[in-house]
Length: 375
Ligand SMILES: Cc1cc2nc3c(=O)[nH]c(=O)nc-3n(C[C@H](O)[C@H](O)[C@H](O)COP(=O)(O)O)c2cc1C
Ligand SMILES: O=C(O)C(=O)c1ccccc1
Image 1 (cartoon, rainbow, N blue to C red):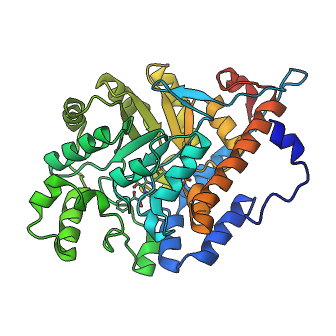
Image 2 (cartoon, protein in one colour; image 1 turned 60 degrees about the vertical axis):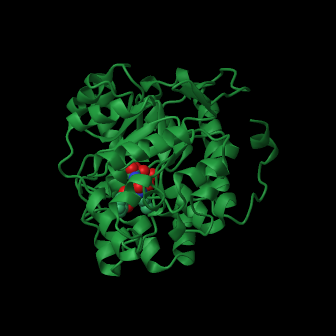
Image 3 (cartoon, protein in one colour; image 1 turned 90 degrees about the vertical axis):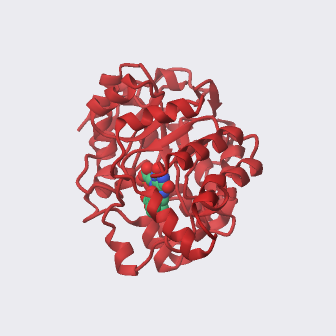
């Protein structure tokens, strides 16, 4: 907390402070295609907006006259400590945002003591990311490949490279209808900006007759979308890895229950940042019913629209064990590589620490629904 008090009124840096300013900064820096891809929601972007709106339906009901001189935001997930209940969400194709790609992001996560979730469709390979930040807690987000051996191979590579969990994203059987990308005629997937994990995979190399751009593109497109995937397939993954399996993209309590029954180790309440099914329920609104159903059996994480310390606090109060942020850290990456990501994380930390203190809370486990009131 010390630095919060000594910084009063100081000009912190030339980086933005408000979330809206970060978006503007990214827009100034990035070409239209990458910026549109980053911002894009699906359809009329109703869910994208509702993810934010949902946070304003709650106010914090603070408690006073408690000793909050020592605020501890840390938590543990799967036995791994993180300095606050915030993680960097899997965001693919980071080479379209900054030349440091995922390397800048993972180093910032390491410096902050928060986990980094590497996407399947990264611009740097999962091994390169791991080597760049061996000290970081890293999870690997798996896009199920049609070819099961490829799926298994990626999971095994992640385990070998030191990743601590496999996050299976289940809300992208097909890609959402993202109008901005169609308007811009832009697809980082087709531009092979997220091909590193495929090109470097021994099973993929066997599948593709020659590693020409055309063949690689075709093989990735053939494998990445999996509208035929079902719950039974997750059992296959269980046999392939000893790592905890996290299911990302759950919105229905019955699906959360199903995941637990199949032995999954955590779930992420998420609508993919409003990028998949438009009009899907806002993540924060889906959270309470899922927390109730899960009833402590496994950790429940959430993402979508988290932009401030108060947002993190509200999600935790509604029962999330941790949140993930997507676009916010990518704005930082675009603006300044690793340093920009660090700026975003540290400002969020400052705000979160102050939110704990001014709400009368000194550690994460004491935050509950009694600190919130619905408007
Ligand atoms: C540009 C971009 C790329 C993404 N790529 C992936 C991905 O590869 N895998 C995945 O599971 N989720 C992906 N997501 C979704 C994020 O993990 C996360 O669910 C979402 O961004 C959270 O919402 P927020 O951006 O409002 O914080 C992506 C999101 C964005 C904005
Ligand atoms: O952009 C995304 O949200 C995303 O997850 C994705 C995944 C595969 C191909 C293209 C986009």
